Length: 288
Image (cartoon, rainbow, N blue to C red; front, side, top):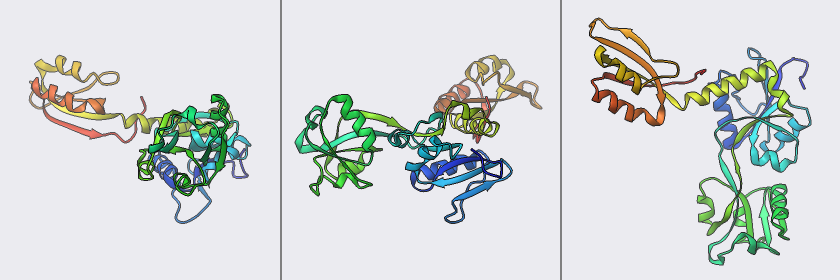
């Protein structure tokens, strides 16, 4: 649903790591969505998008209700909201796991939780998991600081979103069982058709370009002409490497995209066969 401006409305988390990651990704994609203070709406007239800053937990409700065209939130928050939304594009940040945790000394397994009190900020997600496992537990709903609830006598175990697990360890807790859900930041719409809107298709294309660029680097190097075929096998590029002549007719310059995780091994191989002046450069965005 659009307002009188005719702009696409995109919900962005208003605080926390999801907000920081979202704004940074959108900025890299060429959108103007940086707040100077506590503005609720930032209008990007050039790209015909209004960025609406909302609580991460509420975004799926607004999108599912058709009030906002699309939004960025976590899979965990979207599912816990109960809203009917579609994931349009995974964004690759904000990764976490929804897990059970309990004091180490109790040495519990998930099946031992039956009849116990479990504190969580995700009651709907937890209820779904308990029903799936056939466990009868009392859910203690908290808005935050779930890990302290056991020490305060409010709960016997918790179900919470875990990143590194450091906070749990500091509280003397350990994860029990396998994660109930793997989450990350995602772009959501009311349904899959939302991705067909022109502004939305452009947004997804830009975001995909930013994320793909993070997987690659650009390698430039000089190579003796008689070793060019071998060099091209090492750096085949996406379609083919770019090759340019040098003042020395016996040498050529080559430019090619290579996967970031392979770049050091590629440099080693190029140097071994005679490549020189090997330079690796960052790529900020690309379309492949």
